[in-house]
Length: 272
Image (cartoon, rainbow, N blue to C red; front, side, top):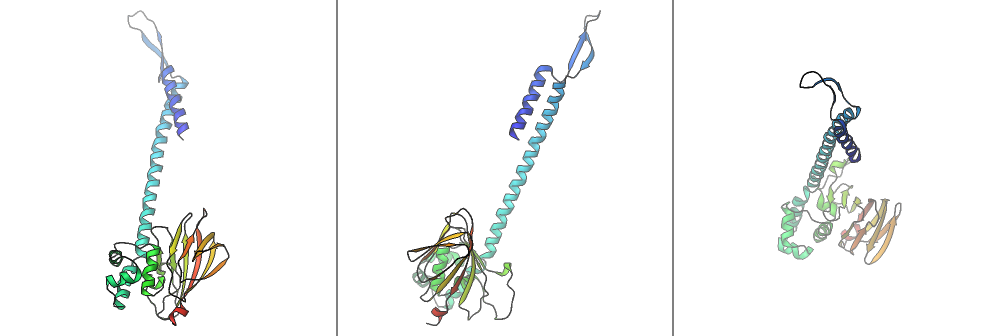
């Protein structure tokens, strides 16, 4: 588009220089002042006029396209912010309620989970969104699953959980999206989640309580998992089982997004 504009401008300039917008033939007469008798617009001048018109139209069109792209980008950014805000809406209230149900002050809970008092206070007030690592520490300190911390409990009946009703956590550091798929029942100890990790990103979670086990299945892409210093390359269609009481890390070393499901079984831990 830029090359075409330059060519049109060159053509218009050349036309104006060689003939202007019109060319007059003059014929002498008996009077002192000559007078024009005919006017011939040269072809290059006409081409120049059309060139300038096309050039100006192109500039206007480019500005319209650029404006449209800016508006679309702003709308997408606003949509992501609204989705993020909605996804984390239940976390502050749940965290504060669960902490108080256990009779823990901010200082006591801070010592138990390893998260600063100031950060816990900010999360409970909805001022700050925790990273995946901090979220894992909070859940471990409360001895509950991530899904229970993010969502609310439901009555044990047959029910359909739509995408808008599934608690979603987005890690502000890695871009990990964790969607809780299983409904939260008071006596349920199995957690089912869909995770999406962007290209070139990694995320780590602290160990859960003793007895917690995880089943990881990669649906799309390739994931490198590190559990207690042991590394595993899990490709699409493969499943990895591991004890989740140690630090576990997820690395996406590829150039495509990885989607993987995790089933967290806390049955053995709850029976202790």
